[in-house]
Image (cartoon, rainbow, N blue to C red):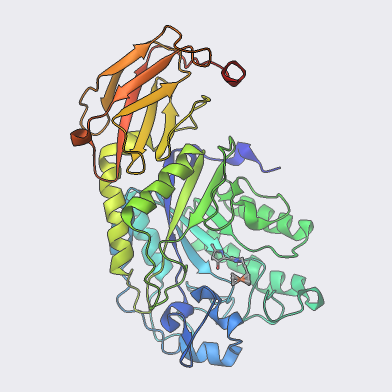
Length: 423
Ligand code: H79
């Protein structure tokens, strides 16, 4: 069981965060010795069996001078994202901050002379964005005793040695030198024991009791749940959960991956995650110079523009606790006194029916403009199945780009016909 009492209100309200995958692998861009790797780009060291020496040689060329924390944090803010999760160390084992306990880090092993995490930390503080960290606590391909899902016999390793020499001391650095950390996003626990998951958990809480811990710490030791990468649950889940997602098909930068989700699809992922009760952690993969690809920046900005008008239906929203039928392309979110219908292009109807709701309706309007919509409120039974139907009129010309949000203001606490009455 996760520890829901550890989950913070800021995170429950945030609903949308920025994931940043960035490392030495970004410099390779998904290609090693002229060969394009078939796996996601951040797995290139394991997949292409790059030796420690060769990988550290690549690091010697990694000099991301265009990295600008202010620009990245400004993009997150403008895009309506409330927290940033930065890869302090991915499975490759290379620290993307100045680690004093292991030389394999961006200050000591590259020509770059700045600590990007220091810069991100102050930029986040300035802009009011929560800084959070990704830390791969079980896999480590540069440390001889870290797990490697592709090339090592994990059972034969002295995992405790890795934990004590590297992971625990690095976590201590991360939680001591960079101010308040909103959460630590562990990943890929593989065969880590419950005892070791707990050791990691306890260290984090001892150093920063307010710091949350995600599910992938392993052995049910975390504070909140996580779905698989890009995996949407089929039904709402009334627990704290998050879905990490990509803007194309890789987390780390791949120069030849142009399979971008467009803004409409990205927004649909966000709303579907939110309407099922989750937070969407959407990834960007800066390149070897430290720049976020323009394509993904554009996607984020378009979604952010929509959110600036429609955020009320997203932030702090909850699962609509009402059984109803919706058409393809319609999602629902809820906050006390208000139901939000998110109408995407997949639904091209001009009359949107809403079944089951029993409350008196105060007003139905388009959220972004406040413009009232007409509706029929049929409170006499029209069939044995439906005691009460609202039919909302949404003329084509009133539709908004990407998705139109209809806000239904109701009187009193939400009341609805139960499912058993429907069947
Ligand atoms: O950081 C991103 C991924 O690198 C990481 N999680 C997100 C957030 C991740 N770690 N493990 N996994 C995802 C699952 C691994 C699946 C595997 Fe494979 C199947 C490893 C080897 C085969 C996927 C496909 C990764 C490489 C090929």
